[in-house]
Length: 356
Ligand code: ATP
Image 1 (cartoon, helix red, strand yellow):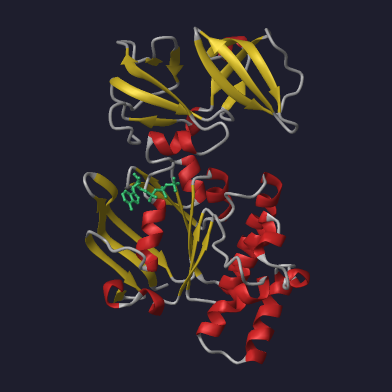
Image 2: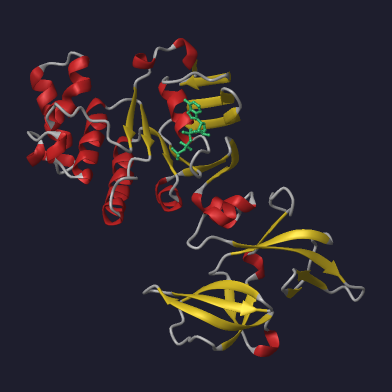
């Protein structure tokens, strides 16, 4: 697959000192759905604005289908964008909002009508086309904004937190719909969000951004199971990976232990170097075992019933630990015996946060 969007050592600074993007190298393939995810202020919107041509890089190049974007005017980039705040024209009806880009392109009236009505049916807003934005709910407005993009059918689709203003139950439906639409139209899509669930469910690949730098690019499975950085491990999952700072100790009888201020765990085998380290373990990666095989004896402090599973807060040697389990016969103050699923834990360098 050829490259649709590529960032080559792209930096964007805002005076006096903000480095919104710091030497970004990123390639989005033609037809790919790539999600850029990260906390507020990490540079997500800046990244989109550069692609759309609403802003220019301070350094480096962006290429669109192999051509330097600096030589393409924003209106000639064949890009459509959907924003969190919908950005609809308030004085125009839903129909005219959707038709806007087609009118600018001077398409014929019958052609415009056909395209608007087709996307409106697809997005189930055909009955609402006469209404103005203030007569529509948030979810309906978002559909109009999406219909406007689909009617024009640009080569690149950009989404900036498009579901941010929707109620959680609408978000799930829209996520499924966006994935379905992409499957149908196969347009190159760059989608930014701070929501890890959206990233996981929508992205064919995910790019995790922090402080203007890429921490990891990979498939949802890679990001979840092999986080390249402690931040990525903690960011994904609900709750995310629990990270415990400590050190590895090797004893003369070749036994190894992970030791923190509050916890000591015997390791089954260890090729890890001795010294400072961070252990990362997901709440679902503990198993209940017999007392003699247990890495930890713990007391349950709290049980949260989440329907299909329980989230346990437990205490072992003064360390609070979170466990997700499908067990239902489990109660506060109970004593339990658990061990990590060692083949699923992650280890990180303590001071850089990088995966070992
Ligand atoms: P959010 O999720 O809150 O929208 P974001 O990840 O999209 O955040 P950006 O809007 O890209 O982040 O901003 C990245 C950094 O650049 C932030 O520190 C922001 O304050 C700064 N920034 C963005 N635009 C400007 C500007 N026009 N002038 C100065 N600083 C800016």
